[in-house]
Length: 152
Figure (cartoon, rainbow, N blue to C red):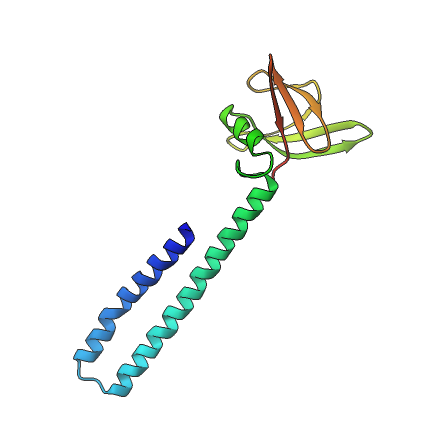
């Protein structure tokens, strides 16, 4: 919805920017052929700008869909956990790897710091990594339990 409003505003701004040039050409006594050529040029520019803005809107829409599917946005799958994690200042899970039951997770904290953790280790805020599975990690602090899944 926001992308469509941006598209409309950009098209309006482009049209307004080109209007004075067309008015000056008409007032300058140029021939009809010259005026038509300028108008056609303006139409070509506006059409290209419209196509670019539509493409940008499609890209933004697809990125929002990807964010929703991967859970990198609180509205996506695991959204409650992501929202809880953000509210508690917890890191996001970048990856989970390992084999034979010896899994480790790479966590990304605010500010870009990365930390590799294993089950039983503590992280900032007195949280303990109580479980690591192939799809998520579980953090505990007293009676609080938070499950976090990987994001891109």
